[in-house]
View (cartoon, helix red, strand yellow):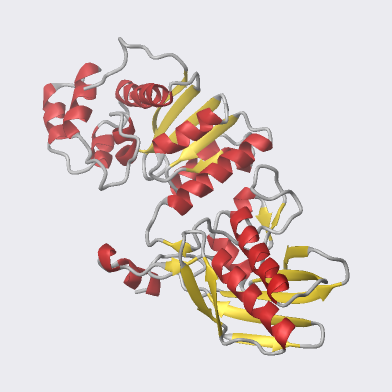
Amino acid sequence: MSTQNKRSKKDPSQMRHGYTTGACAAAMTKAAFIGLATGTVPKEVTIYLPVGQYATFQVHSFEVNEQTVMCETIKDAGDDPDATHQARIQSTVKWQESPGIVIDGGVGIGRATKPGLPVAVGEAAINPVPRKMIHAVLEEGLMTYGIISGVKAVVSAPDGEELAKKTLNGRLGILGGISILGTRGTVVPFSSSAYMASIVQAISVAKETGCDHLVITTGGRSERFAMKQYPHLPEEAFIEMGDFVGFTLKHIAKKEIPNVSLVGMMGKFSKVAQGVMMVHSKSAPVSFEFLAAIAKKVGVKPLMLEEILQANTASQVGELLAGNDDFFEALCRNCCYFSLYHVKYPLNVSTTIYAMNGNCLGKAENINVLDESDWYRG
């Protein structure tokens, strides 16, 4: 069993919070600055986090030469299954002749190559809040020690390029490493905020790169099916929304992107067809009564209706009704109608449902008006 899986089995109420890459970078910048200004690198430093609390970080290693000081800490994500847990986060600080503060990314820190991100194209992927934190510790240091020359901090992550493969950075156009992130400074175990933030960023990138048609999927498998279905669309158009159907649709509407296609499988989309917009397995069970009602509406025989009611999973219902185009079209149309109802914005919505083996079970395309006579609301 992996370390990540061991961590995930703890009681959520007893889970330990960790710290963001942004907090680590700011702390190591402070430590390196102190080392540069005084000639002595501290063993630990304390910084004030955006969440409104102080935190102390250990300096695990450092390097000093005539021009620079580098300090490194090991990121502790607490009990969150974070891709950057135990990552080495470094900051190298040096004086510069011109006044002011310069912040940049070094080895293992990605750079933005697409518009729509919180940082400009060409800049190191150090997000606004971490950048502000780093700037604050440098500004405080200059004032504390009465230094009038300028200073530069370069944040690095020696293993960042490899770690970035476990993130959505490549899809977002952040190449060469990880991002320095965090709006709180702390990591809340199993919070959905990071995933939701990545959805918002992905939609922004798609908008800025000119996409007028987005394809939203519940996972990697359904995304692969979607890419085969829509081969003409660029990579930026495909967004893994996970369980956050309603959240994703609302942000697409907010960005005024006119066309959206939902692609997924029976389990989660049978919930969307009922109007459930958060489709995690714990948020709402599959309603076999609902599926049977849709089947009855399109003329499925009573004996089959009984089998649907006795099914164990939505996928089993999909197998029972494989080949019944009317049923799957009705289910897909319901997904489209509830999507329109949820956002209350004139989107052009399509839905496709796939079986686990990649067979297309059914679809409904280009729905943009709620048809009360066709819409089954249970």
